[in-house]
Image (cartoon, rainbow, N blue to C red; front, side, top):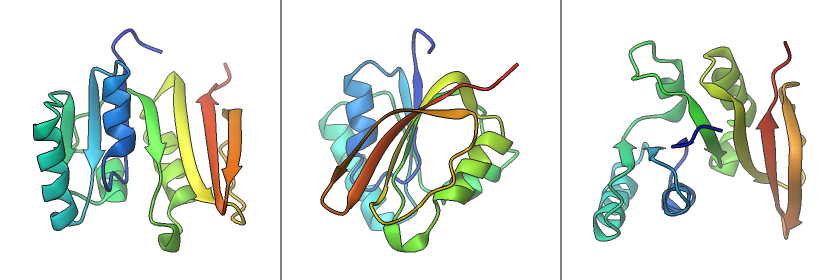
Amino acid sequence: MSQCPVGADLFSGSGALGLESLSRGAEKVIMLELNATVMNQLRQHCSQLQADGALLVQEDALTWLASSAIDRHTIDIAFIDPPFDKNLWEITFEQLVGQALLAEDALIYIESPKAKALTIPPSWQLHRNKVSGDVHYALYKNSPGP
């Protein structure tokens, strides 16, 4: 991972994952949130916390990932915690891999329903996982082959 990591909180909501990443040394975290009301709350949180490294983007994560016009960043840590009822995990995985947005040793944090079987890209190696109630938490490391 790079010395000044860049994170992407793809479905920010409250921003807890992205803000935690900033507090642990990320230089910048791109925080995507489509809902205008939630984005306004996120802006207030970032302002109150003086989270200067937060780059707030009010846009659908999949549109942002697929856009050829985005300011391309190599993502060192991606947070994937979409609304559970939208079933957006695998298309998000496909976009991250297909657009080559992940650093070679990027970390990928995923939250999903315990009962949901996900097809994980073959280049992602499980680092650790846990279940709490009905939620499965997993951390993968991007390890593309030669």
